Amino acid sequence: MTSPEIRTHVVRPSEAEREQALDVLRDGAGSGRLSHDTFLGRLDLVLHASSRSELNAAMADLPAGNPVGRFVLRAVGRVSAFGVRLRGAWRVERLPGLSLPHVGARKLTIGRIPGSGLRLNDASVSRHHAELRREGEDWVLYDLGSTNGTHVNGYRIAGGVRVRPGDQVRFGNLEFRLAAG
Image (cartoon, rainbow, N blue to C red):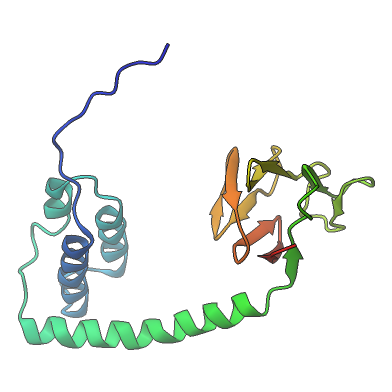
């Protein structure tokens, strides 16, 4: 029996509100009102805020700032971020491809031990690292309690996560881009 879901009326901040709060933090850091460590701490608060009151608390002692200063900081941030995004996209395209098994296959074991369906001979990969299972029309990747973790699109997984062609998967230190089988 499952417990009933209790709904609350806490409104989560929108992406636009988070972006506005980030602009205020950037302005505070750019004008010297926030130290680097304080900026990073408050940045984390803004990104993980579950209510508007948490968002407001992260920037309570900072003035809204002038619009020209915010525009300049936002423009510099976007130009700087472009290089990071470009390098990330270039790196993803250069990842080795890993083909999903053909349609008739039901599961693929991944690990360092001989006999694995996909044997990865690297010390960062556990002997029984992960398993890829066909569930209905989808492929689901399960971490099998590996030491260095299984990641999908940069996030460490616990349990199963649906994967599809184009996703980035990492087993220990080995990273691949999934391709259609």
